Every structure is written in structure tokens, then in C-alpha cells.
Image (cartoon, rainbow over all chains, first blue to last red; front, top):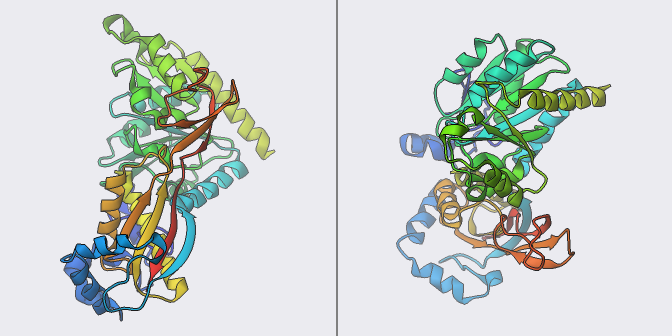
Length: 311
Length: 113
């Protein structure tokens, strides 16, 4: 990751183009070096590099070092061999502070433009993209909508969205298991460059299919919406409580399949409320249209609020 | 594996702090990750070691404290320790609780030479 702008690893791309290509920073001392350490270590000969490798060599072959340092209290721990005494630097800094800064910037953009942004999260195979396609078709009758599509690989989902005529940007996270606010910020730039991010529009961000990691990362959205399909286990809210706690809405999808499944709707809702008593639940089906009036109504209310706050 | 992303944040934070302090070597990093934060301790520590390589924190000792979860019941008002988000109030079984502690993820301090 680049220290200046926080660019993600090389593997992240937007609409097939690597993020790195857009940010040719010239700063020499960045953590790109660790990514290239094996291939290009001679290219990264910082003044202190010898010292590092020296320390490294000593630290690992002598694990008793660590034991030794435990004998001292935490505040006077770790006298490194052959060096002067350790000094403590207080930091007290949140690990998510940087992501949250980018999220705030995204949120400010949404507020300025009256955009109602949602972060859609679920496990793989819950039917997020189908749900998006159906939602877009209905929304397009009245308003503008744009989509940010997150997947580790392929642009298959973006292609499906594009077929609706809605503008879409595909983020491929490579090995990454979640979208972060910085990637989304770049995706928004792409949409803006194409004049595709309209004032007062609905922005649907489809996160990487994963019920764990995306819970921690604020993208600047108004709400996280978690999708639980009837073909999954109803106890997923208990198994993945962080996600169901982070979400404001749970869409219980594929309800048309309920007659053929053992899925207990009441139990699923009870479990979701156990981790998040305030969560709103909408049961819907893209096949028979059940619940779509409620879902579209909820979207319209949110969009109206976003519009009003701009004005 | 969002622990890798978090580890990248850790290393960025501590390397910046070391640079500001005018030192080139970090010997120890103390992290505080609440018991309710969605983080696997071992994975985070492992990722920190991997990401720290060839930087100022290479070879540093990473310490992780996990302060317990604490919550207050919105129904009966009692405070209690909370191990898991799906567990409600032990006194009245209500699930409407306000988490008071145990969700933080931060770098507390570093040792430098």
C-alpha cells in the first residue's frame, strides 16, 4: 500500500486497470518495498537497510530473546542486543482511522450530491447481483442509479448490471476479501469522470461475497444491507454476528423457495434481532416479486431524505 | 483475511510514528483489540510479522491485549461483561444492549531504539 494516498496492493483494479497505474508517486520510502523485496531488494537500498537485515538475522534465530524481555515489565521490555535502552512512544491510534477518513470523504461527497448510498453485503451465492438487477430495473423508472461492483476476480457481475443500462464500475480486489473506502473513492472518481454519478441518485455498492471481513470497513454508505437467502442456514446471524450487527436492514431473499426448504423464517429473524434488535427485515423474492414494494419504498424514503439534506 | 489489511494499518502507523520520533528501529509494538472486535488474534500477529519485514518494525515483538467486552442493558440498566454479541443481558435476558467496551482496535504504543 502506498503511504501517500493509501493505494491498495497491486492486485486491486478498477474496470480492469490497476490502481497503481494511476498513482505514480515518486516517494522512495514506501511499503511498496516489502512487496518487491525478493525481486528488487537491491533497488531499495535505504540507508538503514543493513541495520534491518542485521536485526532480522538476530531476532529470529534467538527466540529466547523474547522470553528474556518478558521478564521485565512491559514498559521496560526488550533491550535489543547491542543497542541502547528502549524508549516508549505512545500512539493510541485506531487501526481503521485511515479507512474511516476515506469513508468520511465518500460520505461528504454523497451528502453534497444528495446520493443515497448502500453497501450490500452477504455470503457468496445469496443472489446479490440478481437482486441488484431487479432493483435497478424498478428504480430506473423513476430515478438515476449507479453501481459499484466488488469481486475478487472477473467482471461477470458488472456485465450483468451493465445490461440493465445502469452505469457500473467493477472493482477487482485480487486476493482482497472486502472493499475499503479508498477503493470505493477511486470507483466514484471513475463514475464522475464518465458523468455517471448523478445528483440525487441511488448508489448501490455490491461488496465482495463474504459475511466476515466487509463488516469492519465503512465505505461511507448510509446503510449496510445484509442479504440472507433462504437457501442458507437460518443461524447465519449467530455465526456471523458482526455483519448482522453492522447492518441496518436484512433482506431475507429467495422466499419463493421456502416451500421446498427447511429454512425457518421466524428463527432467522429472531437470531438477527438477537445480535441486532433494531435491524429491519424485509422478506423478498426476485422471482415472484414478493416484498419488492416494501424494499423499493424503503429505498425511496432513504433517497428522499438524502435529497432533502442536500437542499 | 481482513487481518492482513489491519496489519498493514498497524505497520503504517508504527512506521510513521517511528519516523516522527526520529528513530529507525521498532523493537516492540503493543496492540489493543477488544474481545468483541472481529479479529483473530493469531492471524493478526502473524500478518504483522509478515508485513513488517524490511521495514523499521522488522523483528519487533508484537503484543496483543484483548480487553473484555462490557455492555449495559437498555432494559434493566445493569452493566455486565459480554463475551459474544449474540448473548443478551445475563440479568433480564434482553438483547437491547449498549456496548461500552471491547470493540476497539488500536496501536497503543511502540518501543523504539
